[in-house]
Amino acid sequence: MQAVLCTSWGPPEKLQLDELEPPQQSPGNVIIDVKAVGLNFADTLLINNKYQYHPELPFSPGGEIAGIVHSTGDYVTCCEPGDRVMAYIGWGGARQQLSVAANMITRLPDNISYEMAAGLAVTYGTTLHALRDRARLKKNETIAILGASGGVGQAAIEIARIIGARIIAVASTDEKLKFCKRYGADLTVNYTTQNLKEALKSLTNGEGVDVIYDCVGGEMSEQALRAIAWQGRFLVIGFASGTIPNIPLNLPLLKSCQIIGVFWSEHVKRNLEMHRSNMSLLLNWCAEGRISPHIHKTWPLEQTATALEAIARRKVKGKAIIKV
Ligand SMILES: NC(=O)c1ccc[n+]([C@@H]2O[C@H](COP(=O)([O-])OP(=O)(O)OC[C@H]3O[C@@H](n4cnc5c(N)ncnc54)[C@H](OP(=O)(O)O)[C@@H]3O)[C@@H](O)[C@H]2O)c1
Image (cartoon, rainbow, N blue to C red; front, side, top):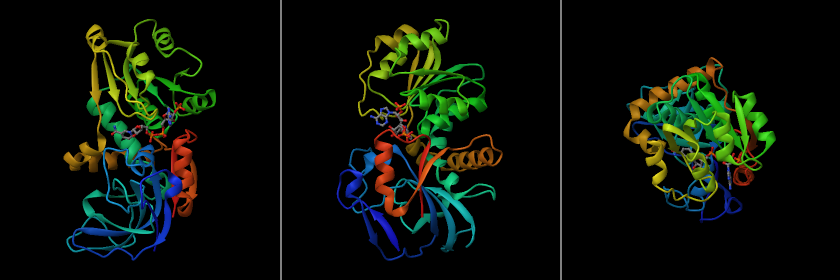
């Protein structure tokens, strides 16, 4: 079978397409014929050895997959050969076949494509956990979403819309902001041409924003925090800008606000049952058309490096998907 492999740390162009032996069946595991792989910003860090996890070389990028069950090991009851399924796997997805622990697998409703299912787990899973469990975002509260046209950003727009919040999308171009409006943003800020703090203050009549969803980091974090409301919640999601900001601690004191970390993959490990029920909830929302992960483009397996370069160059709106 074919697999895209990271054999030495570095940029996407160092990835190689190789021929491997198919995986062996083992008790409690399921062998899946992969149909689609979701790529994320984290994959660009993972192959550079700049992520919080450090897989052993060689490994395949791609932390979420959808496909067809090829065979099941002993003790597996969740699915049967021929079932359409999805799974969050952390990394290892960009290949034709793989073995996955049965407890990470969720069956797909008939009307959800492999491409859409492969783009759901990480971005929507992270955001559901962040908005519901960590920030406790409420109806009619205001949320500002930085990097709002990216993977987790689009998920944040759609889940905040289900909660009933007033959504301010923040992005670097007017074209990206137009995309955000299409998915449900009420208001927009272009942080390349506008001062973020002033714009957020003015859109909230000086009151500030209740919840800030920050997946960008860098200098935007402090600007956003300076526009937070009294007792607001600032969600630390990620640092796509490449810079982890240093925040002056007088700011949370002055607003009596909370700075809240979100580490979704660790949350999954520690709360597997909740993860499984979250995946079912997201698939139901998707089947009902309440959320709809935008597929920016699909690439064939052999062009995984090109897809990762597009993510790193800030070119992808929504999700980058590999079709296997
Ligand atoms: N905490 C968690 O559990 C968790 C889970 C999932 C993801 N994350 C993190 O969330 C961040 C976003 O992930 P994602 O998959 O949504 O990424 P993405 O689709 O690539 O979106 C990231 C967005 O960040 C903005 N950005 C600003 N500076 C950038 C730069 N130098 N390079 C690339 N993008 C830049 C871009 O929007 P503009 O052009 O509009 O600025 C882009 O749309 C990553 O840091 C990821 O590791 C964290």
